[in-house]
Image 1 (cartoon, rainbow, N blue to C red):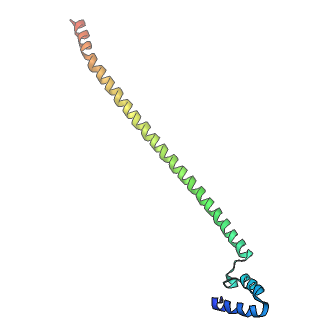
Image 2 (image 1 turned 90 degrees about the horizontal axis):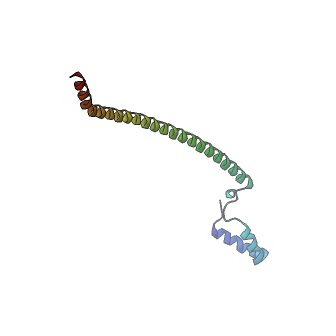
Image 3 (image 1 turned 90 degrees about the vertical axis):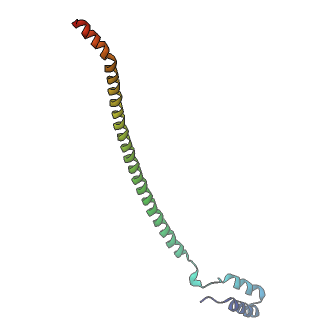
Length: 121
């Protein structure tokens, strides 16, 4: 268990009696204010670095999978839209052509009637 502030102060007073004030202060400042086992070692940091590197690699793989999935969905969606537009455009073209043909037939009917009745009579 980490020493309390009162215990640290008591230790410092004892050290001043043995070592003098300057060296006692230096020694006390070099001691961590927590338990030694709470301090991270180079090995701890290396393990943490390895964990973070592995996490980064997993995240990169997930992001790449998401990019691929999203790209495929966009491609599929665009293909669907293109197909619908092509179908709708074809329908519109047929409707317009049918309308033009009907209008042309309606406009030409009197001419045909006149031609055929004039030829017959």
